[in-house]
Image 1: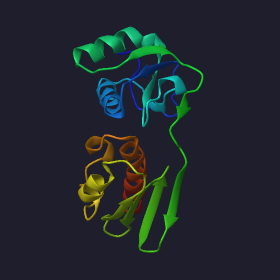
Image 2: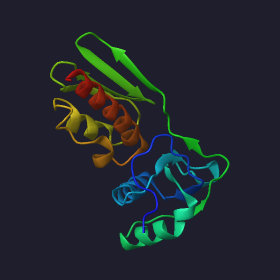
Image 3: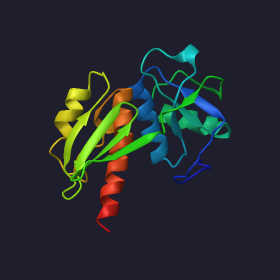
Image 4: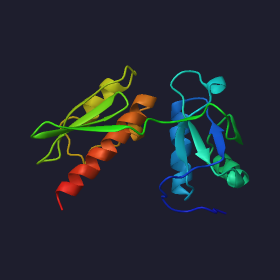
Length: 178
């Protein structure tokens, strides 16, 4: 049974799900969002970090239902805990730069640049993660509305941050078409 539905803004949970790696966290996020839960990717507290890690912020009152859902879907996770000191939001600082014909959106170190008229991605860059060249090959020269989401094809924190930039690019381009 799902208690919280919808895509809210400013969600603040009081629980955290710790995952072994980024791919597991992104998979867990997809499962829970598809089931209607409000969740948010955050950085885990230092004692649980092993590199490019993510965790999920949740409503702790839903922990039992979430555990059941994750078990049913075969999702792997370390555990569900009350929110801990040391957790941090992913960079919510988005910088938009207008280059005339192109717009570049930066989220953290990750950048996506698109042609304002056609919506075609002309560049993606940043980070030092191993999936960045693959993301570049899959995104560049594709229209924003037909390109794959970086967090759906990448497996690192860089892919998650590039997805934040991609989402803003898509919103900007759709907004300019109205």
